[in-house]
Amino acid sequence: PEDSDTFSRAYQQMLGPLGDARYLIVRDAGSIRNPIYRGMWLGIRPFLPNLDERAYHAVPDILASHKKRAEALAKFWRQYVGGGELIYTRRAEGREILLQARSKQHGRIRQMAFELWK
Image 1: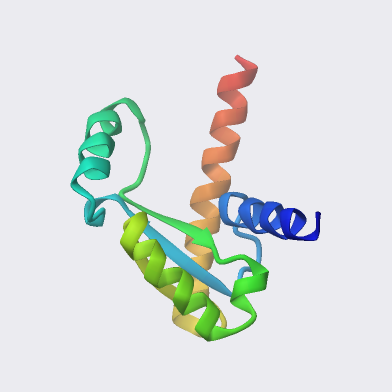
Image 2: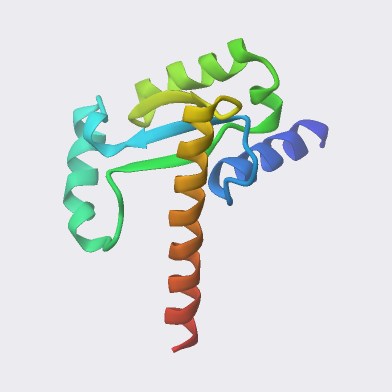
């Protein structure tokens, strides 16, 4: 049960709002290595409006607490997802990226809520 709780919390942190994440990881559809996944993505991409090529995800707290853990996630992210650039948000440059990504994410969530309401 403890492992499943840890996994669930990490999953929610990666796919949920960015909050005050220590590290961000970039998802970049243009760099998906696996040709099968890349083909699938390029096939469905036109049907997903307002989707940026680069998206930012929070590195879960359990991995963000140590740089080596965050780097290990980035390595496998590059291999299986695409992108994988790791951004440390406790420096000015990374903090600016976090703030911009949060503002885009917030706008998208409000837009989705409005569309559901209609």
